[in-house]
Amino acid sequence: MNHPDKHFVDYLCNGLQYGFDTMVKYDNIKTMECRNNLSARSQKDTVADLINKELLNGFVYGPFEKLPFDDYRVSPLGVAEGKYSFKKRLILDLSAPHNDTNVSINDLIDKDLCSMTYVKIDDAIRLITNYGKGTKLSEHNYKVKHILHLLDDFLTVDPPEFDAERTMALMTMIFNRLNVPLAANKTMGPLTCIEYLGIVLDTDKLEARLPANKVERICKFIISIIQKSTCTKRELLQLLGHLNFASRVIVPGRSFVSYLIKLSTKVKELHFYVNLRKEARVDLEFWLRFLHNWNGINMFYDCNYTSNFDMQLYTDASSTIGYGGYYQGKWFCSTWPKELPSLNDKSLSMAFLELYPIVVAALFVG
Image (cartoon, rainbow, N blue to C red; front, side, top):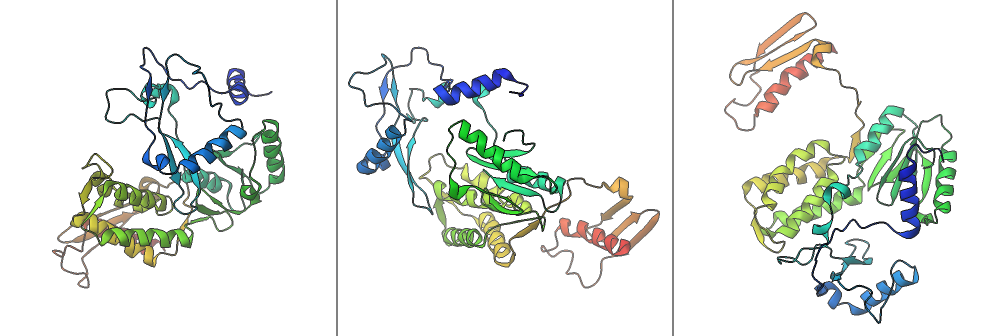
C-alpha cells in the first residue's frame, strides 16, 4: 500500500491474477504450425505427462475442439533434461522457425519494452561487504531493504544487528498472499553461510567458495575437450558456460575466456566443428592447472579502492634495465636481479615486470 509507484503495483497484481501482456506485436502474421523438435517427437509419453501437469495446475488451457483464433502460430515443443538432476521439462521454442522467411514469436516482441538484466553474484557480495561480518542471508520482500532475485530464486541481505527472522516472516507472508508457492526444501535462512546461484557465500569469513563437486565437474569437462583437435560449437559453448560460472568466484578468470568466446563465433550452427588451435589449448591448460591447485575460495574485496594518488605510490618498469618507484617522498630503484631468467625469456611477461616494483614497494611499506 505504501509503494510509491501505484501504476506498477496495479500492473503487477493484475498480471499475477489474470496474466501478463506478451507484448507480441503482430500485423498480418501468417498462420503457421511448426513441427515439434526431435526431443519431443521421440518422447511422446513424456510430453503428454508434462502437458497434463500444466493443465492440472491451470497454467495452460485446452485441448480445443474448435480453434479459438482466426490467425495463430504454433511454436514447436521440445524436451530438455537437466544435465545433473536428469529432471525433464517442457520447452517452447519461440525462436522458430529457424532459417525461414517467416518471423518467429521472439522477433515480434519489442526488445526495448521487454529487455531484462539478471542479478549477479557480485551484487550479493557487494551488499555483504557493505554490511560486514555476520551479515544475515535468507534465500527465498516486503519492506525488506535489500533483496536480489534471479527469476524465482530470491536472496535477502540484512545487517548483523537486524532481526532477519522478521524478514523471513514477511517474505513468507507476502508470497502466501499472492498464492505463490514456496518450495520448503529450497527455503533457507536466515544464515551467515548459504549457497546462492551455485556459489557458497560465507559472511563470517567474508568469502565466496566454489563447491568442490563443481570444481571437479569443470576439470573433467576441460579434460574431455582438451584431448580433441576439434569440437562442436555446442560443446565449446557448454564449456564456456562452465568457465563463466567459475569466473563468478575466480574473477581474473574472465580474462581467459575471451579467445574461446571469439573462437565460438567462427561457425554458425551448433553442430559445426571448430579447430582447437594452440591459443585455445594454452587457455584451457591454464584453467586446468589453476583449478587443480586452487582451494576454491575467493575473499571479498573492499568496494572502496584507494588510488595511487591518495597513497602517493607510483612505480614503473623497464623491459631491459630495471625498475623504480616513489612512495610518499621516498624514491627507490634497482636493476633486475640476476636470479630472474633472461629478459628475452618469453616466460617474463611485461605484466610480471610491472608487478615486481609494486611488490618491492609493499615490502618497504610493511
